[in-house]
Image 1 (cartoon, helix red, strand yellow):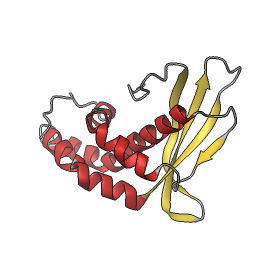
Image 2 (spheres, one colour):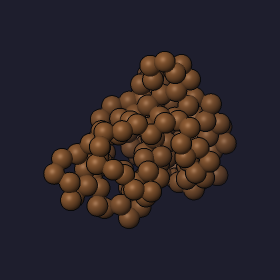
Image 3 (cartoon, rainbow, N blue to C red):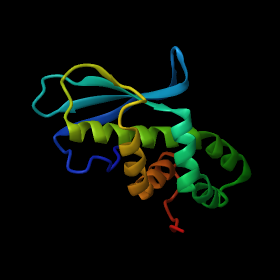
Image 4 (spheres, rainbow, N blue to C red):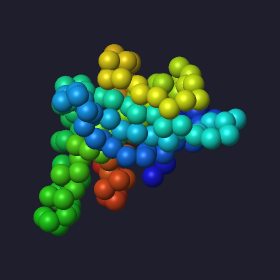
Length: 153
């Protein structure tokens, strides 16, 4: 899926390479790696986007993502529901990482492989994810192949 996450960032083509994965030496941090290609670049780069578990947990709770997703998953067969529920934390981390990457793209990104540490864009990320709750929910439901027939509380 190519999310609609890039507000006006059509100069970039971004795809999720892998993640979330634990970050070596940082037990409370996980990262998603993205391939980023700007139209004017001859080649793309890898950008590792780190987010710490505490921030992910706080955002998940504040935005009540689990409750919203659970309502939709109740329409699935029990075995499908359980498998989908197990994927939600990883998909949520991916959506949050997309939001953080968008912040980096807006700030400008050098054409070099890089890591955006968990300590960068902390407050901005919380604001961005809060503003883009519908995107986060839609991303998760899309990745689960569940029809996005949901209503905001």
